[in-house]
Length: 222
Image 1 (cartoon, one colour):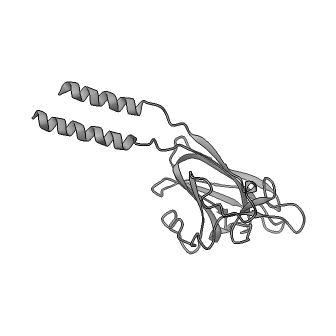
Image 2: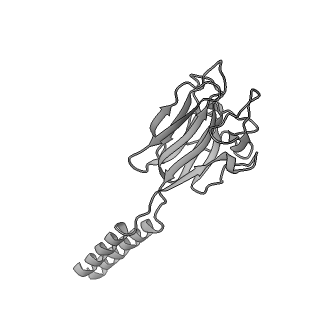
Image 3: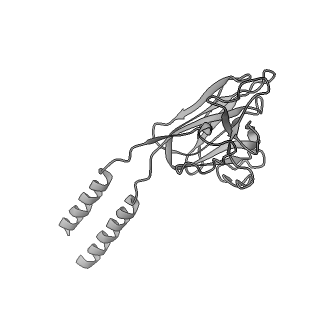
């Protein structure tokens, strides 16, 4: 019995101390896609959705609900200015929705990470000289607890700032970016980057199997 328990313990240590699952860095760059491309699920490690923070204050509970992602999707959008230039940080496209290139509180860029993320960054661009945009980035744990919030400085037309949050561990399950209602509603967002750690396949199942085997062996020995 003692030998069996030692075997189980050693196997468990091998699982936990086995090959590490390194963090991977990802970029979603609207310029990599044709104008109008739906970006909701272009990366298997994150789901992008538009979230209406005016109709619903239950984020991330209502992620992917308000509005219906099949009706209003996150898209790659050529975001040019009638005064010349583009409301982007790179290239000519930013994140858009329904042919609109700005992101107010009612049209937030929301993210759900398929593996817990340790960092998230996104660029925000101002669109007006009359009213400055203030970009907002919030990150949440997988169970919906708000972990951290950052704001950009006030941004005038075509001024750019990077919103970035890095955590000491990979504990980010959701994030959202939008123009703060304390400034202009017309900030644009571009060039999303994040770092996430894949869930080790089968580890939880193997650990449970070891536990069951140990319990059955104990009953037999009794």
